[in-house]
Image: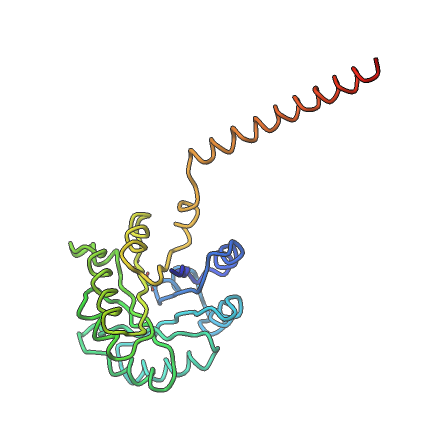
Length: 235
Ligand code: E4P
């Protein structure tokens, strides 16, 4: 299973890349806004360079399918590791599967995003999407169980031999991450604020504290023992 970082914050991406746990990154217009991006192309180029060969998802910004297509082509031309994010429908409910299909036909990797149901996911996979992004937090907001949606989509992908990978996004709690991992996500895209919480545990801290204290005591004991030995050999 891969972990992507759901962020446009270059320092956070760098920090977690150094920890060896980041396989790629995802962004969306809200993330770009929250992270104070003022020049989309410059930010994308900086992040994509930092990521090397790892994929970076960049989302189109319009409801218009012609604009989605031209933005998608343009983003993909910026760097080899760009994955174009296309919502499965626009805000008026028009299918964007044709945009997904056209870009994939041109050899552009596509992340079909804002997916909230099994049916949306399988149609996006049929259209050729490289990734389908299931929004776990938003599925749960609607009173549905994201684990069931993820598991069903994964089973369907395996049963029918599709190459599409499931990205689980819209992470709101640590349990969302655990549930996604155990429900069959190929990728979980995690906002950076959750990563320190994932690695930390108060009892691990206490355990390490005990080891460090005992290491100091053991060292004193060894120095004392060596001293006694040296002393006794002089006699
Ligand atoms: C990632 O690809 C998604 O765009 C992101 O996780 C959505 O998160 P949200 O539901 O908190 O906006």
